[in-house]
Image (cartoon, rainbow, N blue to C red; front, top):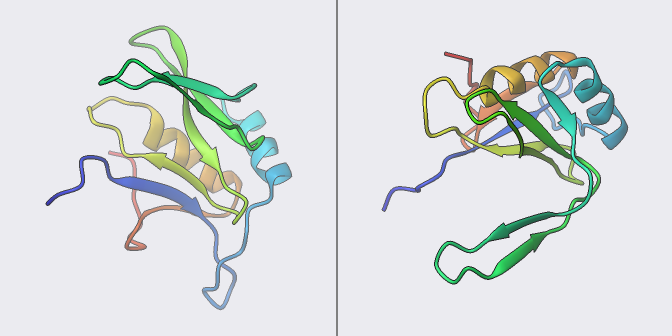
Length: 124
């Protein structure tokens, strides 16, 4: 069975190829330098499409939002994790700004965007 959503992440490695954690402070500073992305405030609330139940997703302090021109809204899309990586879902449509923004953020952090197999992702 094929996954419905492919997860991508921003990761950094040291000179020996070992994981080099991105700190929350580094992440927030990188976000401040890139237009079209900002740190999110508070927890995210989403409605389960089947039950309509509201589910709360806690913000560890590192969630970031991306501005979507097509709907004129800020959407929570990037999630910093305590293990020092930033996770996000691969967009489902062409023209979504998430991968180019993630690549800009990765450049700021001397990191890269990759999939779960470790293969580098570049913006289309």
